[in-house]
Structures are given as C-alpha cells and as structure tokens.
Length: 164
Image (cartoon, rainbow, N blue to C red):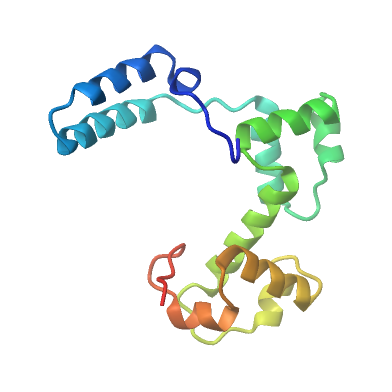
C-alpha cells in the first residue's frame, strides 16, 4: 500500500504490540535498535505469501513487460479483471502499469551500469521505449537526474547515486 499509515496491530498482530512494549521499556536507543533488528529478522523467516494470481502476473509482467496485458493475464488465471487489479495493488503496492514502469527503469540501470559510453537510443529501444521523449521523461522521473548526470555520478551500487 502506498502513502498510507498502517497500525502495527494490522501489520503484525499481537507481536507488534509486544515489540512496542519492549521498545518503550528499553533502557537505551542502542537496545531499541537491537530489539527492532531481532524482531525484523524473525519476520524474514516467514515467507511472503502472494496470491497465486499475483505471483503469476508478476512473473508474466517481468518476463514479457510490454507484451502482456492485464486482460491476457486475467484470461489465464480465471478471476475478474476488477478483482485482479485490486489484489495486485494490495499485494504489490503498485498498479500493473507502475510496476512495469519501475521494472523497465531497472532494466535500463542494468544495461548502463558500470558503462561510461552509452548508446541511449539503443538502450531505449531494447527496454521497450518507442520515443526518446518518453524515455528521457521516465529516466528523470525515476532517478531525479539526467542520463548524463547519472553516468558521471553512478557508483558500483546499482541503485545508488550520491547527491552532489
């Protein structure tokens, strides 16, 4: 879910209340961080259970990002389009369109990572853009900088560009 505040009780049930009480009783901030870290690591042990339709759709959208429509996925999974859109947004936190845009931007970063000279037109076409304006807009929208600024400021970490 995006741009929402969620109560710990809704997220983790009684375990969230227990964490809150332990944090309030912690003697130091360092101890609070230790308690939080242990709690979060325990949460990682539990598998994230996506609805089968959402898991299938994610797989299809990642494999064929510009060739798979919501309609074709819905036809394959047998639930209504309205229910699918609701499930996808609830579990992924993005609409199908936003999810595919983010994945496409990630493909761009993978293609240009650790590269100093880039054929941007080729990258745009390879990643599914059919016009430079759309490509430039998305790049700036997701990164907050221009393509040339990205190349100059990129680090060895794929998703991190330091501020100037």
